[in-house]
Length: 187
View 1 (cartoon, rainbow, N blue to C red):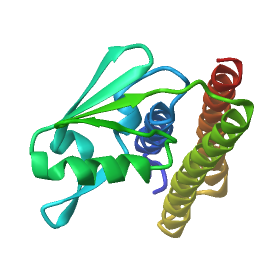
View 2 (cartoon, rainbow, N blue to C red):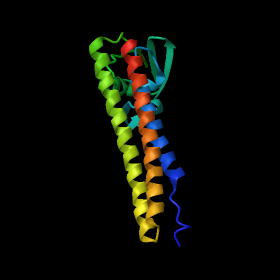
View 3 (cartoon, one colour):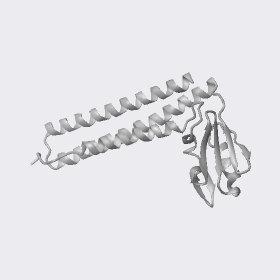
């Protein structure tokens, strides 16, 4: 009766990996003293009555290691893009040159590095919350299976399995956080 009850461990594990991948994407949006086109991924512009990602109204390039250029396609949008970058919290001050915005990447000072390390911690905590939510969903599956006749022994085995993948995902998040914080603090 309980032998055919299965818990979707692969699905839970994949969702936990997705939380880790989302955190890593968030990490790429923080500037580390080097120019990167992905720095502007989370910047949204008020365009045509909607909040639009910057890459849908402009081309973002990295012509040199400490410079990002944003080539705005519609010249009426240049000021909106400028405002979006200035208010994004990235600490960048665009220099307008027609439809091109030049974003010089300043050296990171100690205070800004600590601030960024704190932001990394927030991104990591968000990922951990996502992982714990996936764990809770798995535990809910086990409770449902118990109601359908899963034995106590099987229930314990599945709970341990879910806890193991949760612990592994949290460990990966902590390792990625440590590595990124070290990168920021030593730049």
